[in-house]
Length: 399
Image (tube, rainbow, N blue to C red; front, side, top):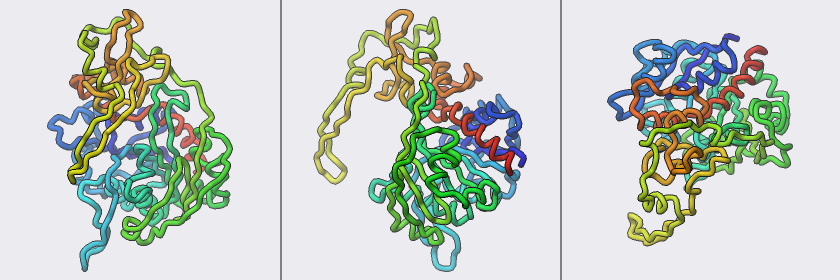
């Protein structure tokens, strides 16, 4: 099977870079990157600066793209936003589903329906499995129901990149889906679900873990997706498998690999502008523990509390999860003690790229610094994709 890829919500190309590091045979036939409310599409410009453009549709809102015009591909990849995936039944006389406007999962579903990619690899935040708080598991249930209705089976795993040798403690949900008529799908049918999650499945082969002790089973009525949206609840664990609406899930413990400490990713002779001034009171307040009285919209008074964050960050450990607000005066921003002079400073854009596993100065193509940090906060850890790409190499060879 040819290794052709469609990359959605491409950012600055983390999926593409990771796959190409796994094999030169991966060919991206189309991509889409568009940031709403941005006049200048810096991420798209960065992507194009490395690989060139494909057509006039790669840098516009995916909702405006005719799905028939997207080239055929054998692997669909993308890091899509965690949103409200609820749906309603259509108005009388209409067909299809009425999802909330702007929710990008439905663009993925529409492309799968039109192009029928044999394999799918997606990334999302770890809380996807538990959302929304009022109906735990509903959102992921809607996604699984959509896959099942299109004749896909699904494996998933929550991966902390630092558990598998990376330089960042970044937890993300990865979803691997495959059409049931693929060789991989047919082979999976003959396996016990425990064997898939424990040893033989995509994630089990890519990210070694301790032996499974128990699994929890359930079922999803995937032929009635609005009903799933209205009623479905399920205690999804950090690993699982779904076939024909049958759900199997378990709590996986990784077999840990030594991570990259932040100190090994730091630059030398960092410019003065990245160092903090002497007034650190605001930083100390943001990073410290706090209990604050607040009043909700309904008028109810409650106490907001949060624990402390290391200040400065321990450079002997991997970096914490990097967010799009990195470098701003923000609780989540990394502040380190520079090993050369002992002064407190922010991480540099180049260091942010290293934390995500990109090449040095990947985003240094005229992009303002605040967007370089933003793009890295939005990105995924490239080395995790490379690991998955190597497993995909084997799967594609057997198709």
